[in-house]
Length: 146
Image (tube, rainbow, N blue to C red; front, side, top):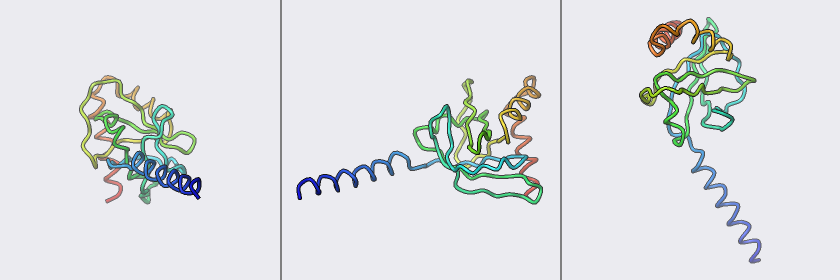
């Protein structure tokens, strides 16, 4: 009886700790010019799960907006020059090495259907203000939903 009680307590404690540690609290929107067909709802950065995809909204022109939730422990990774890209049916965060300001919750972030498209976008915009170029692209995609 004693062993059974300890086992039940351990299972319950494990469940509640996992819920508390992985509960997403910071919501953002990732916009894509092309639908990347992401099937996995987990979001990764350097192999670590940092959040989840909560919802997908696809336009008639095959443009996509994802509603995502980032775990509180990783909120500092979401900055004004943050980008996402799809790779092997998962959403990955392109970590910024710059010291840009944090993005407020419910901001729009630019996403790419592949890492190649992300690299191409960055190459085209190296001489421009990178954050400004991303905001212009976001506005074009959002307009297609209206």
